[in-house]
Amino acid sequence: MKKLAILAFSVLFLTLSFLSLEFALTHENHNHEDIGHKNPCPVCIIIHSVNNLIKQLFSTVKACLPVIASTLGAFFLLRTTTICFEHYTLVAIKVRIDN
Image (tube, rainbow, N blue to C red; front, side):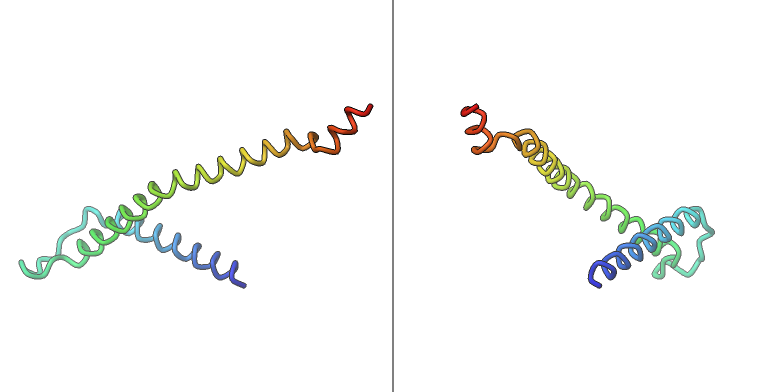
């Protein structure tokens, strides 16, 4: 149940991120509503917040990428070394010496 909830949350988060990016790209060159100097354009506010969200997401991914890569590298390195030394147990060495 937890895995399904995490998967649903991840899919929802990615979908909302891509829809926000699509909104920002389609409304980038919009006609500004002249509300006044104190009240900025609502579309511009949304576009700026989406741009900040995307910058934060990519900076998080850039920060986590070395950790994920080193973890996967260590996992595959340990997996490879255990496969290579799998036949050299103490019992296998003793049997080979006795023969």
